[in-house]
Structure formats: structure tokens, C-alpha cells
Length: 217
Image (cartoon, rainbow, N blue to C red; front, side, top):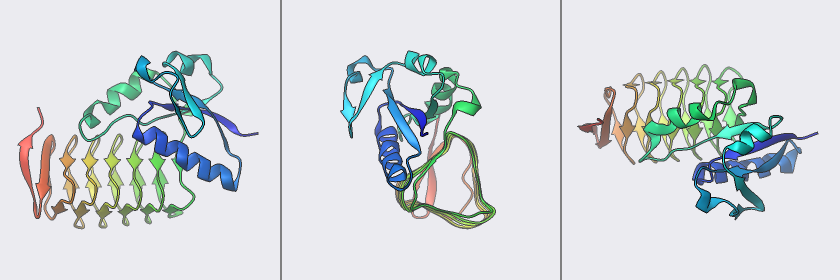
């Protein structure tokens, strides 16, 4: 019998998660999507791919037998992701991990819970991806990397081997990271950035080569 699942919130990440689930179910019926839940009442009743926004987070408590995938956040709000997810008060055992069938995940890689991995992503050997992460399509994370919790990756990101990306980072679409780099916690790397040096915590960096533009207060 398929596992029930609720998607939170009704944003781009959750809608892409539904598309991923549809592709998973086309191979093997694994998930039964109960619906989206969203704190914004103006989204209640909306629909995507035949699945409705059934209401607010009270439905997570109502459907205690359902898994939850909580994937809020975008480039302007990524630092709020941890707070939003924690406020849902969902235990680890109920948090799902969704991986698209086309993703290539090494048997030696480790993927955390409440993590969404989209089409054509590659996670290579001995790499660890933390909990509550989102990795958009066509991104490659090479061998021996360590990705902290609550990190988000845009599409077409390339991370070379032995990189460490600390918690709550946002790596923008098309960014490239040289091997053996460290990106500090709560840092945003801009779209198309070419990162060749370590980047500290709590900053925004972009360009070629990537440079710190400003601190994040």
C-alpha cells in the first residue's frame, strides 16, 4: 500500500516535489499525496497536477499517519527555512526523503531526512547531504563533500570534491565550486558564481571569481 504524504507549503519546491512523486509512482506506486498545506489562506483550494491545497498546518496534525515533506524557502527567504520547519513540530520518523528516479546517488553517499533531490542530480561517493536539503535538477555534488542541514541548491550547480558547505546555505543556479572549499554557514552564493576561495559565514558572494559583496545581518 502506498505511503500517505503531505507537501508543505504550496511553493515551487513542493510543486516540483509533486512532479517528482508522479515520476516515482509511474515506476512503482509508492506515495499517495493527500494534498498541499499552506499557512497562506489565499492558497487554500488551489490545485496543481490534480492535488489541492487542503488547508493549513492543522492538517499535518489531523493526518498523523501521513509522512510530511516540508520544503519552504527561496533565495530571499532561505534563512527562515529552519525556523519554519521546526515550527511544524513534525518528528523525524514522519519526515520523508524524495529522490527522483533519474538521480544518480552513490551507494556510498548518505542522504538525510526531509530532503528533496530533483531530476538528473548526481551525488557522488562518500558525500553526505544533510537533513532538510533541496537540490534542484542537473546539479552535481562530487566525491567526499559534506553538505550541512537546511542547504538549498539551484539547478546546474557543480560542486567539486572535498567541499564543505555549512548549514543553511543557498547555492544559486549555475554556480561552480572548486575542490576543497568551505562555504560558511548561512551564506548565499549568487547565480553563476565561480567560487575559487573559501567563503565565510553570513555573507552574500557572487561573481567570477566570487567575492563577498555584503554581510547578511
